[in-house]
Image 1 (cartoon, one colour):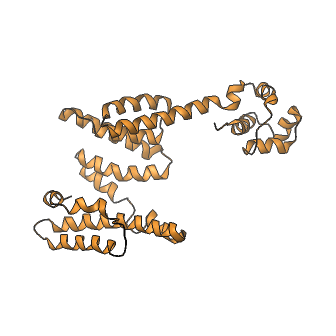
Image 2 (tube, one colour):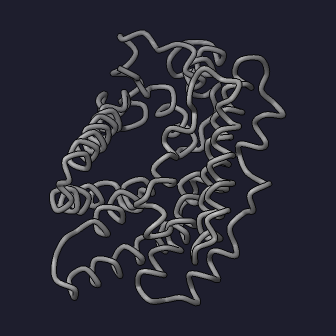
Image 3 (cartoon, one colour):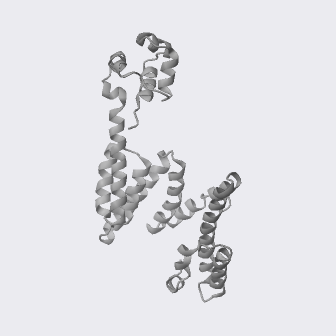
Length: 266
């Protein structure tokens, strides 16, 4: 169990505008001990907890951070249940789960993403699906206004383009899509400059799958209208990627070159 005593001591001390020296003097320990606790490099002796709690005017449970620990455990349970429901297609259950979870963790970006995703997978009448989609868009806009996690924001910036498009908001979809980073300035291209050895090779292989998927998608669009030469180029790209590797890293992309993919386009 990850105790949060140090973090709590620091927060309570700062809220009361106390120095580490003042807290140390009350407890009869060195200021270095307080500093060590706040950096989570050690814990106070258990016999000091009641004195610390009384000094700050809180319960020992609050000092230890039991409320935060319980919330963290509940948060993990919620996310695990969402994943299980998602695998089984229980989207209605997930919407209900996220509505309750957001009462406890309001504006949590990951929960908002999961709520948005579940809403767009919901079945119903045309009117109901339209309402679910509008609610999903509102949640994604909320993430973009207040969310601080850069990875979640980046994914939302991409996903909301398609939500706008499905909702008939073509101009918004195009406007948002034009704000996305280009293919060159991305995580995969940056990582290969800083990694070394096998990590660098693994990152490069993973990036090639993503780049190949992008190329296949664009070539498949160009192939629509009977220009099958573009399909042949896409197939050649996949072949080249596997020529010198014992592992077929492009297997997940093969469905794009299937008859189904050709017939319907992307």
